[in-house]
Image (cartoon, rainbow, N blue to C red; front, side, top):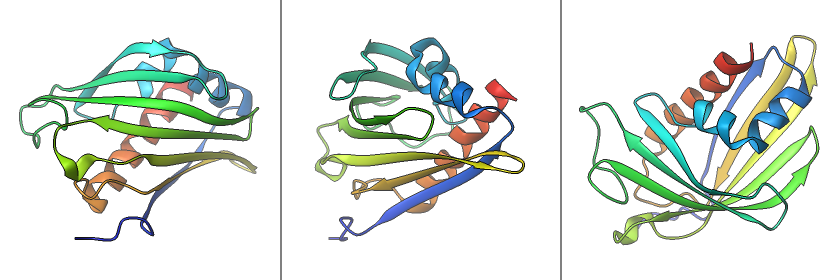
Length: 156
């Protein structure tokens, strides 16, 4: 068994948009569903309450036929999330759990999104801790980079 407690998957990208616009893209479910799904997936918001301590639920569906099997069903990943921390224009911390019968996807992953002003725009960094062992690190980090590219495409 791999020890994922100490594993941290990360990605970062400079986005040419204001911190206000980026932060708003996290709190607006219609915007979130446009940029969060990695390439090859589409999203649907099932539940969304963007306040600290409140929950959200999202279904990600593979649209690409050349994908690995989904975590919840053959072609879907259903995530149950909770906003642990919302620091306006600076930081979003989420607790994410995958709905899956496969124990390799069990556990709560913590996703921390940091927004930092740099000369070129806003550096958005995503750090994921306690990543379920069923998620390969290279594949996950590629997905995180794809998600950040989606955010840039929406806002730039």
